[in-house]
Image (cartoon, rainbow, N blue to C red; front, side, top):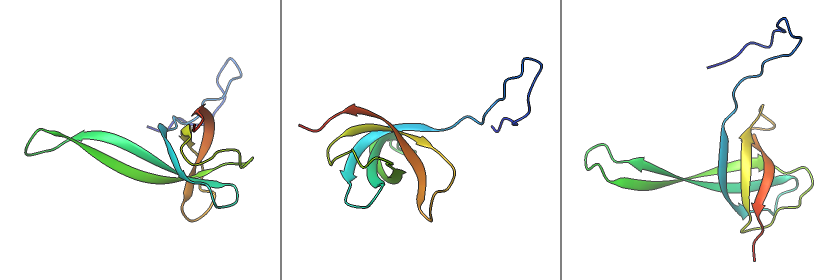
Length: 96
């Protein structure tokens, strides 16, 4: 599902479709990095029951402005380190 970066007749460039997820910040103690827990509902193959799966993503936070408990939107990006492949785009809701 990759789109090439070639210019067309209108002069615009196409970009690859990037994954976007929403989750909750579970750690922000690292410098410019936050750990975001993303919960997905997947159907169990045998029992056809929905199961919650949690995945922890390491996301780049340039300004260090997110705190534990914030709801954020993250977008896939190029590898920034060994385990950091996401960046925080929006803070949807601040922790109370």
